[in-house]
Picture 1 (cartoon, rainbow, N blue to C red):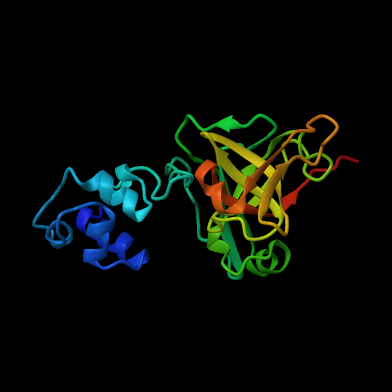
Picture 2 (picture 1 turned 90 degrees about the vertical axis):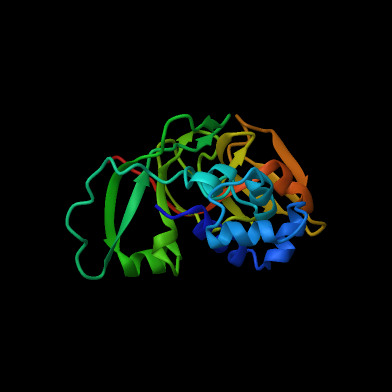
Length: 234
């Protein structure tokens, strides 16, 4: 398992901060604390929560390497399903994960995330139909509820780009609001207002509005829905 030093260096580098800048952002007296942690001379520190906050990562991940790296990330799935042989040439393997974002009141993710099944699909199909240049960022989830009908049906499989962590365009997103996992349509007005609503406005007429600059204070974007599969019966 990677050490605290390795995780701290990686997170600071990704945040484009020097040791001195990180120490200042975390409220430390000097950068030597950061330096001693990154060199491995210190194996743990009471300053880890402050450093995690300054870096925008989860304190448990930084301190112990457990749990998701970023707030709102789906936890790393447990290896409870054998992946089997490697996919054939030209195919990529997608993970169908256990969380079920709700199209309604929202679902609390209480159990550890695990892989329900693996889906081997053509890489060209992912790039052309799902629209992802990086298939490794795509996870498959089962959407539950009726608030997005008729666009997305109850129990549809949704292809989510979990690397898409911010609102940058109108679309359908998986979001975490106060610990509840939701699948909702997001619209953006010219004045910077973010509108979160359902497509099934007859049964779910409520909508929420947030200034874009402050939306991240309340909402964590877990990913953007790039495509979905609906099963139609003959």
